[in-house]
Length: 212
Image 1 (cartoon, rainbow, N blue to C red):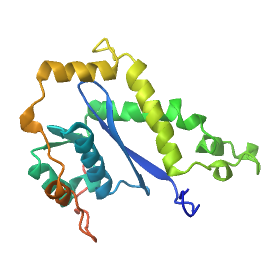
Image 2: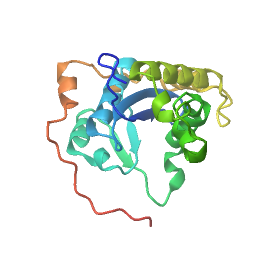
Image 3: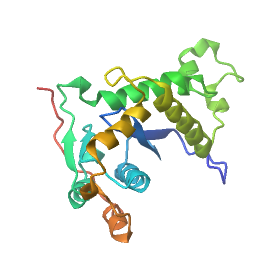
Image 4: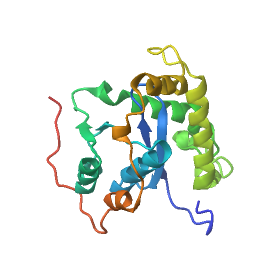
């Protein structure tokens, strides 16, 4: 729901930037629509730079059309990021993000009023149990709850490979590998210009990819 007008904006979508070393959720972004938009990813990367003063050295993405857009390629080149796209034949390549979405869905979203899981039991739906009529959270409220969930997960969940929480593993990684001043990003007007998506930007036409 729009917090100002109360208008139903439709189903929100979320994008997640995860640090592969520590499994820490770095930034989460929001958008609306069935498919991610070019600006949604750029917004997440800008917030990452604002929050940590750095951008990923390597960015691993799935094969959504929006992830191949020229605006993202230009932003990556301008800021020294290497782009890697998940091979269709390697389902676990994007595991850190997909597992994070799964934890969020099972641990939080399926327990909120208005979640659409109840819609699968059509014969049990009534006017008082219809999830479409119970979805009353505004986007800022949902963002706040998801942010609390991410912080709780990162501060208490033990990553088996590291033997510590994502928060602790992230801080340890910074200590072990240094500040890397060469990767420092100055978030100024020039930086923000590289993240602007031109109105009417068309997504690249690509042949459907096939698993090898």
